Length: 450
Image (tube, rainbow, N blue to C red; front, side, top):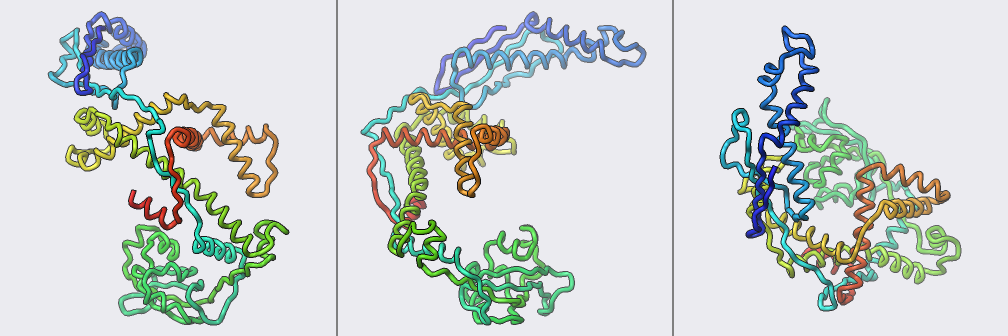
């Protein structure tokens, strides 16, 4: 077997593999002899079928199979040994049909797409903004109100006001406004805050037990997942309702009375004596909120790094090859026309993969099995503390972590988490970052634009 690779042109090359009969004959003969041992052919005892019949029946298919195995093995070894940085996988060039029955020597040609040569160095000349989210008074007040509700008390007033929870029997109506015998029926709580239509929301204000309300549920509840849960039907049923009109019979009104912002609440949330007054409480809530926002800021930085390097390096890509490769290897049928609409996004994603791999290489960022196990143990320990459970000793944590990591999806999550942490540390250390303080609302608008 002889394999040669042409010189690269426009990030593409051709690999030619020449196979002669002597390359595969021994392998083919061995397989055919094994076939003879197990073949059951009418008129012959098992293992006694003449080789002529075995050859006639199986030889061509065995040659095809064995030659293809040799080709794949040869291509893999060549790419690995020569460190050919391929994109996608080699694609056969079909110039003329192969006569497997009559020919002994074959020539195969493969087209390969090559990754561009480049380097990535992060210096102080590389500048980005780092957006630090500050919790403003409005946000802090909202968080404090949520905490007060969490520790509040539920009451059952006679009549509802806006924001109350209304427990109802919900029944589907026919075209005449009569409850359908075999229609949808369910008991559920209606949260007024989730009613999209303002006029319908007003219908639920001032209601009392046994009041009846007729509602077009598709207008009232635009979130179909929530609507499906409320009616106790699957998502498909929502889009196939025979009638969208439903009768809501009020069973009772529930009102959540928020707890007062006083020492009793502060002690429940942070422990006895930790917080003395409302000012300290709000300062603590503000600090915790801003600590949680660091993750959002870090994700924004990561996205900005991706955009920065893709735009700065503008890596050349073997685009025509990649398009053909995507069409040929896609699990679902895809045309060039369909591909054109999404190819730019795919190409940028592939460019970033190449850039990130180079950053990992330059900064020696690796994740070992020991790293994954140790990180998982830290996560388990933190979760146990969160739920007030004893941490357990190192052996117990190791056993739990080992069991979790048997799940490939969970293992990949931990790998990705560690990689993200380590690459983020490289970006923060090497980029010249200008810190900019923004409110959460400003940050959301900025993220939406990006």
